[in-house]
Length: 357
Image (cartoon, rainbow, N blue to C red; front, top):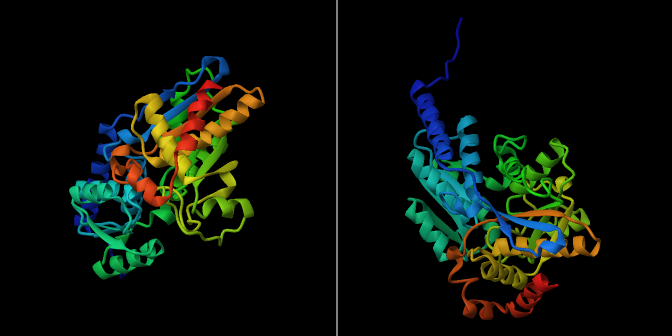
């Protein structure tokens, strides 16, 4: 009897060792903290921020990059010597560069030319190469081209984010949130608020909520210039937009990983309010956060105002996506904001007044 044996013991051993190496990184990193945001006790509402900036690569995307590497390794797409290529607005590429270096693989990040210099420096620090394109919408095809040219693997976070993570549990971000809330006054949150970049985080949390039969609702905060909010409102998944100035969330198209049916509410947040939210969080908590966290917090404020108006008590949870240090030359720079036509002062005044209401 003739047969073909495609088993390569050397490659199989390399993959097993790579999986062990990635999993060992997880074991070395304790779970991220859930911080209390100080609200007046008389409100009966608690706000929590899950601090994803404390991951080894400094952002929420560390979880995604780990899952994508394990998914590619388990599927046989990544082997010894495979060049990893990713389309990214920055943070996912930083995290993937870290994991690529961890397992000894070359990495190329395809990113918009407007990506912050701080993120580019981090990618290069971890040994990755940055391939910048002028048109943000060109990152997908350029990534496919580079992967084909190098014989590599295009990770394609925007397609695989929703399936690479086990939404049933396995200490994913949703399971972690509910576990950390177990001893809090309102252990089942009224709302969880996240942004939509790939759509993977909202898909994981939304599915987990339904799977565990929680009454929690999921809100997605979306910045201006993103296609997600208008597409969700009109139920038109062919919607396109200009793209977001808030790095890491908001996209010029509806990404394949976006799962609209697990989302209960979408909240549109102007860019000036996102940056104001970023500055306000640091004022109140002392924690320097990025603008996507500001987007999240702005949406939380809207929801808490609603809860108070309706006489509801409960808890709201959102994410610290990354730190402010990655945006010193953009959202942290008043001259940059002025050049962009962003006036954050009215929004800062509104947010400051919120705590005194």
